Image (cartoon, rainbow, N blue to C red; front, side, top):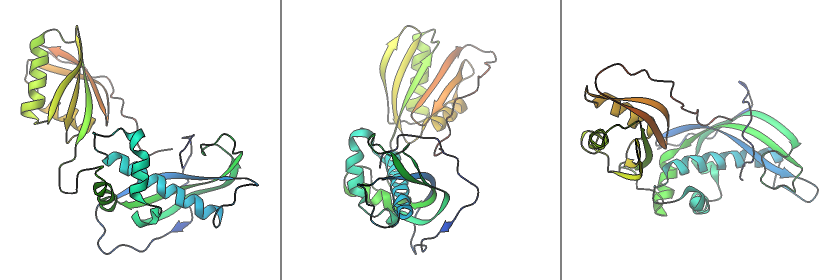
Amino acid sequence: MRLRGLSCVALAAGLALWVSPRVHAGEIRRVEAVGAIPLGPEITPSGPPRDAAVRAALRDAALRLALDLLSTDFDPIEAESAILEALGDDPFLYATRFRILEDRGEGPALFVNDLEVKSEYIVVVEAHLDLDRIRQRMAARGLVAPAGEARRVQVRVVMEGLGTYEAFQSLRRILLEDLGVRSAVPVEMQRGRVVLKVVSDRKGPELLDDMLAVLPPELQIVPVASDDKMVRFRVWEGPGPATSPAIDTPELNRY
């Protein structure tokens, strides 16, 4: 179920639904997800609409975690159908427990990705999912490295305000030698600006923090924006304070 809206406020209290804890549950991740199913005179859900909406929410939560695990060799949009096939038809397999935060019931269609559908049933669910079980299903289809191997994250590093080629070389050397990234390949170069495609085991904010920790005194960077897939900063060459603007880090897993 694809979502076509992203605005929903989870209530602090709701009806709790619990799944029996697994004896050998691995790494557990908490995710909030919206479940929406279409309603109409020609649509007959298999079972109560609320139960079907909960299933849709758990499937969406598992899909989002699987997309985070997806190898950078795959395009997320193109790989989505393969991921759903790998996860199978029963999203309850991955839930160690969950609860309904909000049962919104029947209302105008906002989330169902079908313009012909006029109404839908919506719930908001807090789910605790077994990430290792999701990873195993993904690895079996070659969509992610097996557990135990280092994660592989691709981040675009945008360097602005470069005054010299030597400054660019120094920053790239820091990435490759001091931080030990797998690769740092220039994909865009123009006067004063370079974009690198960096592959490592770090997401954007982690990579930025590690760079700030090892910069030499004669080279500073001023963070501009950062998220899981992108880091952007301005380069300050020479000694002196560099005032950092607020970093734009969009909150994840919220509706």
